[in-house]
Image 1 (cartoon, rainbow, N blue to C red):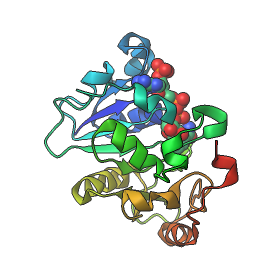
Image 2 (image 1 turned 90 degrees about the vertical axis):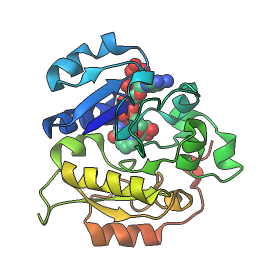
Image 3 (image 1 turned 90 degrees about the horizontal axis):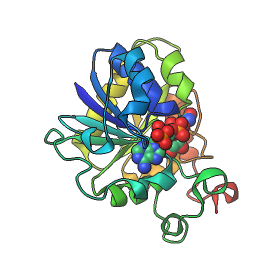
Length: 221
Ligand SMILES: NC(=O)c1ccc[n+]([C@@H]2O[C@H](COP(=O)([O-])OP(=O)(O)OC[C@H]3O[C@@H](n4cnc5c(N)ncnc54)[C@H](OP(=O)(O)O)[C@@H]3O)[C@@H](O)[C@H]2O)c1
């Protein structure tokens, strides 16, 4: 499958490593340009591209950059050339104090982080991996049925796109739990019980059910 990855940091880099190892055709982009991705390309066989080339021919486009950089992405043409019915996988989190600064629409309008992101991107997103340690992508994948296999919550409004993302995560070696739509995705945002949880399907379901819609003080700007 052709997969585009926008962001080549902790998460984007490790997804590039695993997805290429599984035989997928990965195009990867960062903010500084393809010439700065030579080492990752050499290591993985992925193709370094510009941001607007990443989605070409892709069935899944991963957006994995700091939340504050989302408005810097091109407002038109970002997904030009993607396969019909493509899914956008959003791994983002809002860290107002350490990294992103205050984003009024999230705090005052009460938008979920992914709803804010998809408004900027102009395309529905599927939220996954946002509570997964980047290193776990390399170290904690397990075959289906393995008792140590961990599960990830996946939220999204587009059922077809969510299905495509869940299938890819299964291939990457993790179970998934349907965490509802994007308006429900506060249940997996930072500081919720499921955030950073390394548990199986039942533990993830329980953690999602225990979440509070109140944004924690430490995640307010
Ligand atoms: N780290 C984790 O364990 C973890 C876990 C779950 C979720 N997340 C979330 O996933 C997202 C990515 O996290 P990360 O830790 O992978 O970030 P990171 O290591 O800081 O990497 C960020 C990547 O985004 C690229 N980038 C920044 N602005 C860009 C722009 N305008 N256009 C294109 N690319 C741009 C950077 O490119 P340059 O280097 O060229 O600037 C870099 O490749 C964040 O929202 C984070 O909260 C992280």
